[in-house]
Image (tube, rainbow, N blue to C red; front, side, top):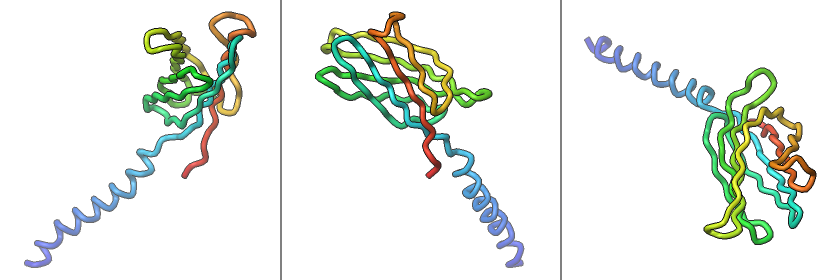
Length: 134
């Protein structure tokens, strides 16, 4: 009779162990370093943060007196690229800002260059680098 009482508990324990072992691998996201370089006529700035596939991100930093915010989401890999929806906001003051939104297909390790004005004066360089698994 005792065996029958312990058998369901043993099965539950085995199930929980299997779930615990499978969960970390299944929930682990690919991690990347996103580096955004802003090259404007008055100043050049750089901001970088760690991002994970499928998770929205937002990061702000101040460089040369200008607050810069980057936010977006990196989609899972399709063929050889990762689609990044990225918004860059440069804050001259709390009420004055310049926002740009991009939809980019990035290859890790390969720099993307572009900008709002098709000129070298307002260039944006964006680099996505895969971080080694931890």
